[in-house]
Image (cartoon, rainbow, N blue to C red; front, side, top):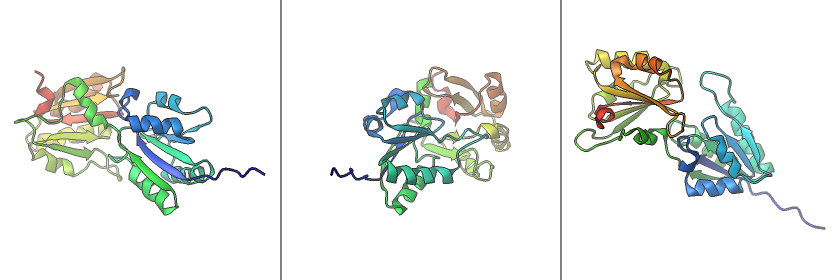
Length: 243
């Protein structure tokens, strides 16, 4: 009698990068080819699924912003179920899973349930702003980077934005498209309404769109180019360096 091959439960939390499928790491490329199950997000480029072997199960667990989504609890249960029934589970997440993602939550859950875990970083969307000639730092112009969320768990704008504005650093805002008016007001109230700002949607993809202007006009800027989520907001003198 031939023994059935035992299943070794593994979870790989993998960064899919900012959008362009060629911007994933070589390690991610190889893991996708070996996956038994891929649980992929809304922001992960679907072309990456073509790397998987034919028998791999590819399951969408995306979260459309402000719309219907697969709950985090359901995703965790899927990780557990497929790790023990299939083996190598890849959790494919847009950008980098540890930057405003729940990648580490999923790592911890898997470990608590006896699943071996691995993390493969991805290029974050903020790094793709260089494709529009915007460096995140530049000597004598920006002394660092503040990266903040535009929408906290309770739906409000992060209070760290006011702290970030007091520095000589580039401010990068994720998930801030619903808060453009409040972002503008925060800068205006601090006397910084004329700070250069840019919004980039679908960074690194052929459909990428970008608008530049002053932070006080950021809501009108987005409306003029019909920009919506997913998009990254960059505020600071680096936005105008190319000029």
